[in-house]
Length: 190
Image (cartoon, rainbow, N blue to C red; front, side, top):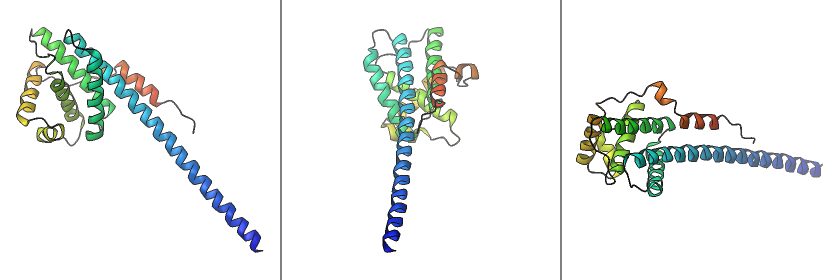
């Protein structure tokens, strides 16, 4: 009788272990697919942004720029929980800045300030999308940028784009966003 009780306990223990193992493996697969999606949209976004800067600033190295932008986006995703939609809006704001500077015959973007312009595009995107927004003081601290420089850069950016920050549905449905959305719908077998 004790033998059957012992075997029954072993069976229930092994079932529990199996369900724990399969559960953790499912979570691991889900976690991996989420990480793949995050990497995919961050890389796609980095490529788009580096292409915009390459077109706007002759002679800029796209390879170095791509690596720097990728690092910045990863940093923003970790520190500010950057969403894909906010990245798409930052791309649109940067495109708008480039277009407006050509129309106004102003040359704001240079090799020296691409980092600050990228930073401002993302800060504005975060401010547009979030219900609770941070003040520039917060971003200055997180990004280790003097608040005066951040404020002046933001004002310059806003003046160039004529304070036009609204991103319409047509602009928002970029090919990059659609590709990532389709990728998220893929069912990954567990």
